Length: 503
Image 1: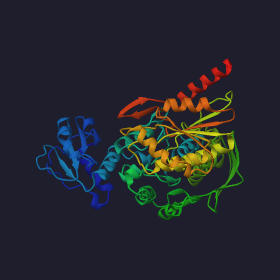
Image 2: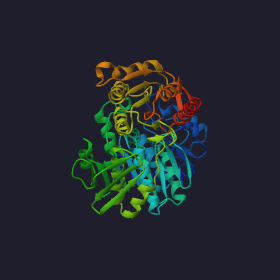
Image 3: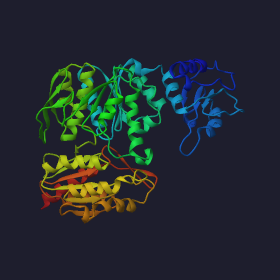
Image 4: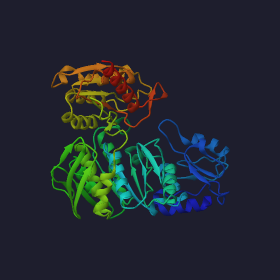
């Protein structure tokens, strides 16, 4: 398409107050558009550069670099008179980027069923469940989230939960080209606040829950909630939205949706479970839905996963997927990387579990799942640097209340001093916050902390390694280093087996 056609499509798609102003330099609007980006380093000949106003820098400052690299037009929020290429002024460059990217890739979300999942905890697992159900129903399903991007038969590690709009639209076009009839995507609060998902046509959405997280970005819980709610305000009329009404914010989310499908364990709702059966083999229960009963057999464990399963059932029944396909999809999902992932084997005398829990609420849920399964619970965790500091002592408090041994260590300290982060976590694990006798140990080096916890464990104990889950790296002092909790845990377990044989 030409630059003129790209701008015309953008203008048709957005409300009148978001439409672009006439470009200052109208030459070359007939030039062919070969791409859209906000990153001047990615610009090639024929690309349109969208200058975003960032938190630290302004994209307009990089427009000369983009033009030198071959940009045929610049889109920005303010005017620069000396531009040598068409310069288009818009009200909100982030909104413009979302719609220009969708227009360039010809709106792939309109060619498949896109389900958006948002909430603090449970997004990834719910996404895997919904994807498995689509596949069981015979619909090839793309997947985008915290762990992975899956496009047809290809899968690669995710760089961020919800990519920026050009990458998002590009991947969805690849999904359509690969024969995907559906896409399940986690929609982060950052993406919603920064308008990355504005141009996506959603066929359905899921709200899991809302607990404290990302306050370093949003500032307060109300703004965090407002970002999550935007997904449901964006939905086309009559689009189904599965909403957890056991969460205190669920009712407000339901009010924002035009076609809510509620799910709950504790109160009347559209989707509710019968008696729950918990075991080391997984979950088993019947879920009552407006379309009939779904017989649930899942290898996932614990009460939090009951909510994830109910959310997946809620949205897929509303989308008309046959109940038997829903049952097959739930049963065939073996697990989710970094979500209550067993690093130990049946031959080990202890259980070692790796989980992504990195908020106080997620840590509490993880510990409540593990407690009935263990003689003792040993918890290894830390808190991320350059992120919300208010949750650090809360995580320490939860760990000290529900564990028998707590090993506080580094997570991704990033640019912060690891010992200082540990001290802030440890404030919540002091004796006055505990309800029982707990051993608390601090070990800065995460590898040493994992080795220590597994070496100290006794037969029948459960060792929980929380915070990083599926991640294969650790960010320390601005450097990204290879690190895999599962691999380190298995190394420690092998050393434990060797000591046992020698003994």
